[in-house]
Length: 310
Image 1 (cartoon, one colour):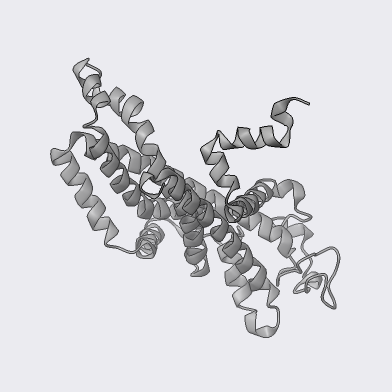
Image 2 (cartoon, helix red, strand yellow):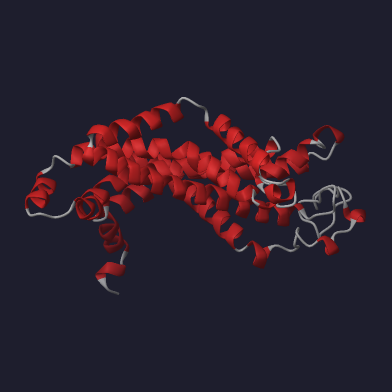
């Protein structure tokens, strides 16, 4: 057996990789990453592993409505976690709902990171009037709570778009609203990191050799500001998923015809006091577990990538 395949060789291989070593040395982070990965993969593969299609109206049967989970009296093996008031399989709806919530949260964070990187780099590198304009916009927007910004965007969209078009474009509206509330944090962090990097010797040397500002920003400064951005993006993924659930619970997010974790909790809340508690318990537990796992991984990334905490 080669030395690298022995237990001692494997430990040495891991010890030479500090990030992997610190990851494996934190059992809570490993567990959170495992749970989060399983939930994300299950959501992506929802069309393949879901026993029922909650979007197929023809397959729904009202006689199967409000069935309890399989381990309760009256439950059916066909519906592991029970059904809702329309006869939809709750387990399948959870898979598709998690998929929708993750898609909305992921795209929102990606858009916010792109805008935050762009304006943060420009403000930090050029300074002056550019910095003043960008940071005043950031300061003004950060005075408004994220939920207020999202409600404002939704209200404006309802006033502009016809009712039938608003439901069709509701996903894009909520993505825009969430990204609008996240990008100021990214821009402020990137701007602060860029202010530090632009005075480093390697940036000054690049300026002296005549390299253009866009190339300096992309080739030299951008890789050195991505650490904090990665931490912000990971933590804000949980914030965006929770924001989508909050807006959908309030009835201004994803429409009920497209199940998300927020809409499932809103529907289940209507039956909370009538005995069908599984309709709100399982979506609520799924949301809490997903957000908690993402936040734990984000906290670990912050500890690893922040030099002040090393």
